[in-house]
Image (cartoon, rainbow, N blue to C red; front, side, top):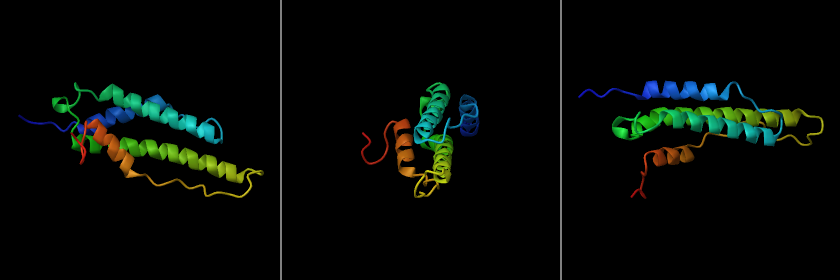
Length: 133
């Protein structure tokens, strides 16, 4: 039996729906509550895109294999992180430039941490690592 690589097409479909659900959204104001609302919107759009395309019907043998999770979930989680981190950095930069901002704080974005992302991929695989049962 010939196994087809579903990861590229699956990534494309999920990314297309993710971006469609976002519809060029941006934080509504230069405030941290607005950045938090934007992060919720971005995370919700990604979760909905995952829900639409990741199911037992779309995955081989009805299972999420590590190579699929790594090639589909990782790039989308990194894209989600980049959107939110860039928005938060822009808010911080605008606050630094405001006349009443007081002492400026660095406006850069934080690094992408892989540990939480790996935990999500493990949960998608229904257990992996030293404590998997």
